[in-house]
Image (cartoon, rainbow, N blue to C red):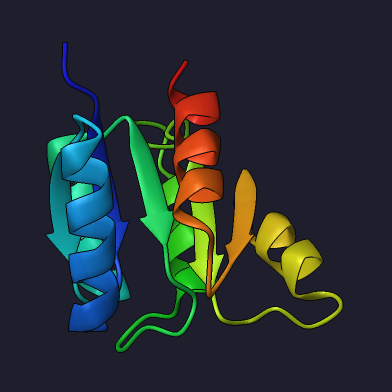
Length: 121
């Protein structure tokens, strides 16, 4: 069965990179462009994994992660922060919000795919 990944990312170029990389690797993609619609789509679609940007309109990635993890129906879904927030302490902040993994932008496609496969295996 094809694994489904919800990408919550507001920048079209970043979504296209992730779309190309992940669909070519055989994954099905669902996309949201802000934190609020990402929360809603996580509940409706029940993806196998969420890739979460942190700098999002309406509801930021930290808050979106907290809300997804607070919902008993979606709390089991692994969330990986994929963010340009790469300063000291940013990974800890993402994990405190409930992220299960962390990838800094710009990322290596090989490393991102390895991380995705790690969470989906």
